[in-house]
Length: 179
Picture 1: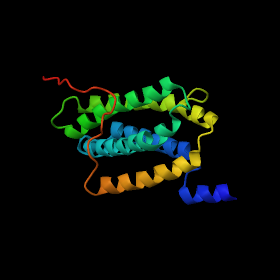
Picture 2: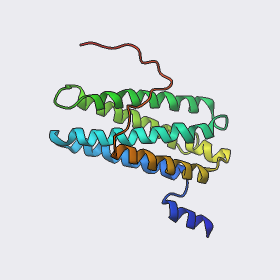
Picture 3: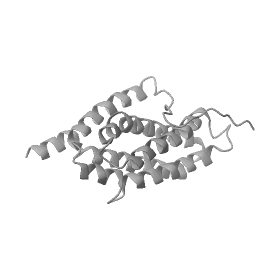
Picture 4: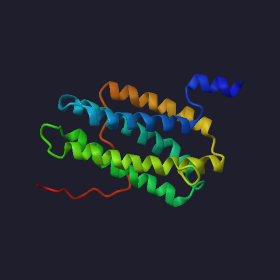
């Protein structure tokens, strides 16, 4: 009974359920962007960017550190690099608009493809990060609670003054392309 009470109080059975719900929400937003008319594309893109920033923060601050040394190192390291690749695009999308950036839609499309790949890496049934976390016996309930608390703070920030640009942590971003 305690498990079902904890589940109903939090809305998600564990940290993985929370992260998967985030994945589905972003997938839906990418589909919404594809269907959007030019006037609403930037609004949907901003929502995608906010969701991804919040998601990467809770993973990098809470979920990934709890997995370090408990899952395959390559899986763990690649997740950070994949996040940074997405963050570069998130920041670029946020800095532009469909009206002044001829590559705007392409950037959102590539971001969608990068996220689709990342989600596949995390959710793969036997070798994925989530499967490895379960196999390692990580306390996914405690992680869920910490992640939900942090997510709530970040969502409040997003609705208030907005979130800062996504912080790239492991990929060097020092060159600039000029057209």
